[in-house]
Length: 146
Image (tube, rainbow, N blue to C red; front, side, top):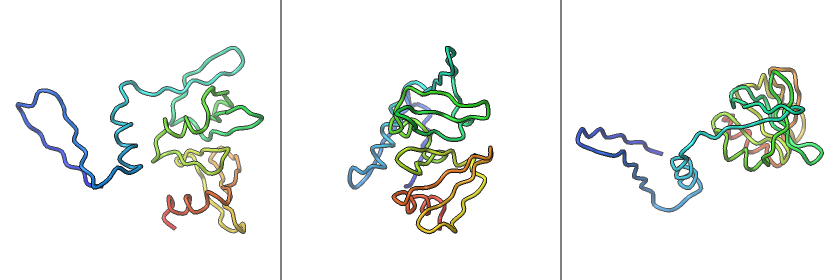
């Protein structure tokens, strides 16, 4: 993708033009992101208390028992959104889906162990250990550049 920025002193309102040879998933995601007017906030519940969660504090998000949880250094929070909705809201540069039931923050990953046959073991900085499902191994390898 090429990015071009032109500064025009007499221009009134900022204008964004996307030029592509066809409509792709990347173009659609770019248009959706540019169209967001307000910052997307994540709110987690713990007991009777609601807490605004900063994406950079989230270690991983996972589904268990029909509910979705966010794990931070402070503990676990119940989220009211589904994983696919969270995947759309979170930065694709920082968060990656590793299975049908989990999304991890790449900045909070301590290491990847590729010695397991058919899967990848992910160790998080907080000590949590999780696994990339076979279906997502190719995607993770692409993200890691291997």
